Image (cartoon, rainbow, N blue to C red; front, side):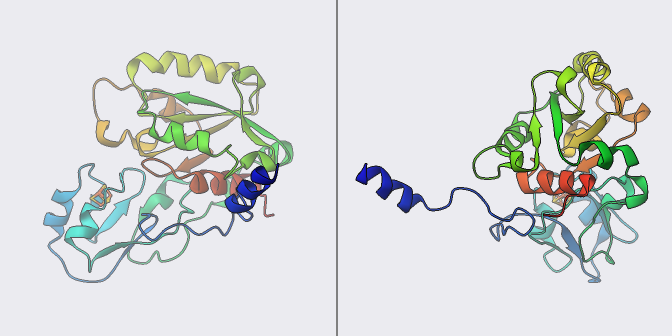
Length: 250
Ligand code: SF4
């Protein structure tokens, strides 16, 4: 008994008390910042493996960025990564980082469907669909519910059946063989239903963008409620994005 108490004391608090203002280690790559430094923009564009860097002027599309850090390693005066993990938004164009963007990305309140906050701010059940994913973002989404992040404290949980869910979270670039299962899963969720894209692969296809092995028709024809950048997504990015969507400010 005494030994158990000693272990518990030694471990300290296992959960993060304030998920809204938690700190992450300095090595974490969050929202990039772009300086006005003059660089060879073509060389910078060429270094990016996913065409996330656009030139004239230099911009970074976080929906395509794999956060590999190669651009900031080769052009440290031009691009630096902050530890800001609040990257989620509900407007695809907001993921385009320009020189002017030096603060949090945030959601566009005009694009949040009214029924989402009315119905789901006290309880949100989600079904995760790995549509050709590599298990990295899936692992991080799993961590959202562990004792450390504990998003269940806000009534946000993953469930096994789409019939018990209020929305789906898609990971992976959506391979052809997952296009139909994704449609079937989405149809099984009762309306109104939320769609969240988690990770670079889900948002743009990532390194697989343009591959004939993908079928991204689902993304093109449905309204996306939340884009969560990251490769993989950090639990704090996902949880804060969902809290913003639901209007929860503990
Ligand atoms: S960190 Fe992003 S923008 Fe920079 S090279 Fe890697 S993928 Fe491209």
